[in-house]
Length: 100
Picture 1 (cartoon, rainbow, N blue to C red):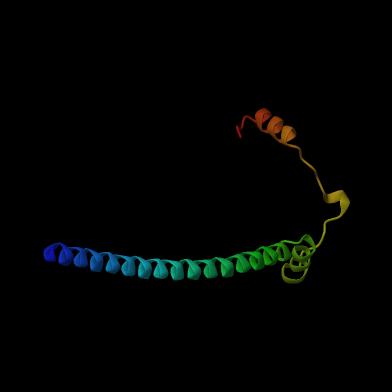
Picture 2 (tube, helix red, strand yellow):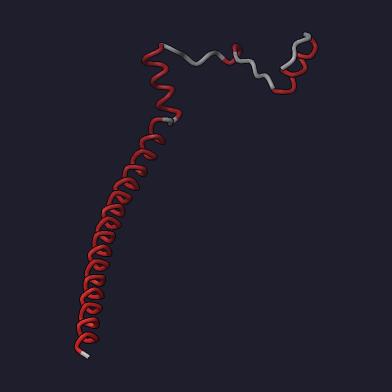
């Protein structure tokens, strides 16, 4: 009977150590998860800021302003503008013997 009690005490101690170890592991994993969630929140904020910055940078008015100021470009006169459709361009290439 004494040997059975000793055996059961060892089983109890092993089980207790297993519970403590698993609880410690759970806490470490939970802390890592919370850390990753914090990083995710920061990245979401940065993504929103970058989208806003991109939409600001590609605004037509801003591009036109930079073209005028830095590149000294001007809007051509209406008589200088020539509109070419895709069909016209393909027909012209076919008649000239060139392939697209």
